[in-house]
Image (tube, rainbow, N blue to C red):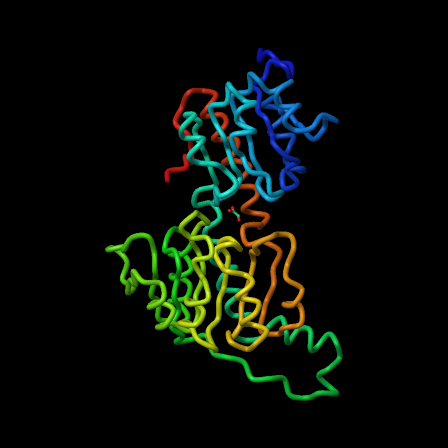
Length: 327
Ligand SMILES: O=CC(=O)O
């Protein structure tokens, strides 16, 4: 007969902040692990960690609240050996510091790539074909009174530049090929197995494309990589779709150019200071705004729960992680 374990006999896992996306699935975690929840305590985070988390070997991190897993937090967790983040991006983790302390990292890996790529293509179609703007036009009752709706732009055959041809970028490319688009890309390295033209120079890529889709991760090198010069190279009719991280684009410059009509449009799922979105964008019909939801589908959240559980279970049974993060 199976012996039922009391919660305090279960392996301890620290959950750094309230995981909204897990609320309905939390029961699956709490039958396997003793979840330590700092937000249930009145103590400030660091004091809670020092008081209760000294022996915690594993931590689950759900990004999204500007919390950075840095030395100050890690100093309170001397027994930590594993961080499981529920995201594909790891810019909320001080990866170098975790490596230095020999703390392993598991992440969402390829889990969200299809959903994010679908969203990137959706945003591009929306910007070019005015889907959201047309929806507003109809809902506001303007059709009968104002008549014609402005002409849209065609997607088929467009020259599309993908910035970051990793797992997500490759999925975006596959989808856009289906629309007859001509794909080229900029990435840290040339991908010899893929047929698309590679531009080692981002400006050259921008100058040869009608839209850029930002698919790379945020690092010190990619912060504000899409700057004034890249936008100038892309041209007044160019479109930028960003499903990576807001800070990859110089947002002030982007907003200025959109307002001045020096850029054709933008589809943005991510912003520099989420959840703050520059209000100047709200009245622009050539801009489509989305609240950082490209990864969020019912299906991906089920997969994510299984993946996070799988990584924690592998760790506690000394097996290889299911989705280790490799720089
Ligand atoms: O943005 C979402 C993620 O990085 O998973």
